[in-house]
Image (tube, rainbow, N blue to C red; front, side, top):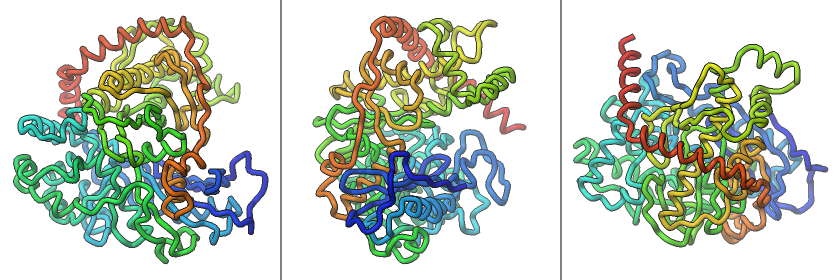
Length: 566
């Protein structure tokens, strides 16, 4: 399904006005969206969304019906091409902009979403190997490679590998090396057929230009590229002798800086998108990191939280620090001339949706229908009337594992304090608060590690929930600023497209001209903040008790064994 609309503030359609425009395309977990943006000032003329036909593939493969094990999450590459075929021309048509006024296009992707391909870029999922699960793109939230990640981390520490400290001491199961090692060890034939192991962020640029490229952002944060290189062959051979040449044969490729022009739009891609062949195509990027430009968060100390199904936190600093549990620090990973730090939470919006899917009785649904509300609005309204701590609950926000600071995707959620009087809105509010507590853990880790946070900025769909934003302000004891654009990643991509096309000299200048944020929209209430301080102390006690994982790992192991035997 594709939908297109101009922004509410758009008063007229441009024609021959002499302005120049770019297109930004954001590939998310469930859909892709395109936005048409004026390069002079960042005005968004129109956007379009295309919902993926296959969505998240986590039960069985399309076509063959091959059943997937627990903790798997795949995607279909044709869904991504369809965004180019449908969302981009729909956005351009809705904007009224003539295609010859569009000077560049840029894209961003969820990460680490990674896929094996042939040497020409053909996904193995679209070859005779399509009935093999490991031939398919692994979505960022594919967490079945946790055993491989554990071995990668243990060996790195045993050998004293320098790079492990740049990733908070632990490489995630979500990232390139763990997923690739899982392919090798569970389906060697697919691994042998894999000529390229490539981030979807780079693969989609390959589809636009017809030539392969790799970007510094995904390589640095998801591909263990530090100080000019990847982990060495001796280390990789110690993981598995057949893994020794993984970097040299499947991964290594010259890296392009963010905002650089990596090619021109091919004739085939021009036919898909309705744009002119030959316009600038920018290097690929990660959805969270590219949003920093849209939210004017590229300056040091502006911590940006991109809040959707999950949350990614990014912040720049002038110093290099190794902070335990942080996803990574990359020189130039967000903008040239700064060290970009990344952290995150593997589930946020997904947790709130889970409450709706699992814990709302029919009477609540009837009330929402009668009032013309969706269930999120109903539970938010009911929860907003509670005093802080009134539900008597503390929850751990690990329903999809923990990305920061424990970096363990086999952890699971915990709710403490349930009674027979607990209501759905109690659980809902406890989950809102749990994600805020998880963010506070990240902020405190950054600041204790020497990376100051001067401003907290939120982008993404969850910024529209006023109760959630106020909870964050109270829990963090700091104001919350908001990105103006509702299409932050797509706008950020359009900013980078403007740089690649030469309309602005660099990303910082383009950000100043095209980005927008509203400062201190929510401010903390001292009395509520005091109450949350006491609750956060309890959260940390639960966090530190269950964080080592023995009990939660045993539960997951029992579950997986039972499912495998069924």
